Length: 230
Image 1 (tube, rainbow, N blue to C red):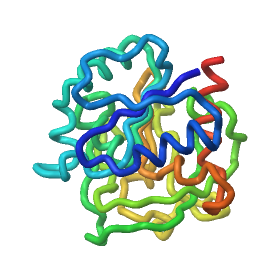
Image 2: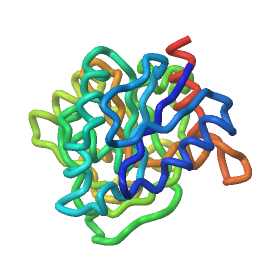
Image 3: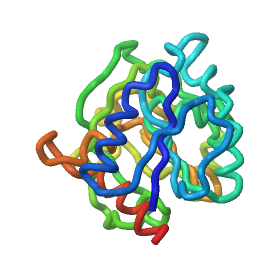
């Protein structure tokens, strides 16, 4: 089981993801440079990390979408490979067309960095296979543009297909407006594509894989991936 972490100019959570996967969880892990034009055959899951790819110029993820490696990431995903985009990585996935919708500025128009609680709606995905039904995860967010938006037809499709995986909730699992940190429609914190092999989420699971940092709930997502692929 080997993870590949794409590094774009401006990525700032690539080393966080590497440390969590390799040192906290013990998985084989390697960096993939944004100018690479192939993905090693032993890579089983690609991580698009958080950060400010290309300085968030134009709009978040819009330039990274054209990095040479993204053609290979799209090909990898279309062939059934697992891809997880975290924060800026989620934004890149929407820009590249691997996931529907868009990420807008937070309704507060402020950068938000704090712990949030997530309700897992679908535990039958490669990314949630080890998460018990009704378990509430505590995972940090750190973003200015995490407000998920899609038109009504897309939202209905996401709901009907079980593609909404994580929603912002209270610690007790209530999905309320007060629990929504950024204004995302339907409190959406993470979604998959129709085939469930691509996940985009705004919270940072890699930051909660070590007890010394305050929690290990994020490790369940990466362990679920490994469990699915073994």
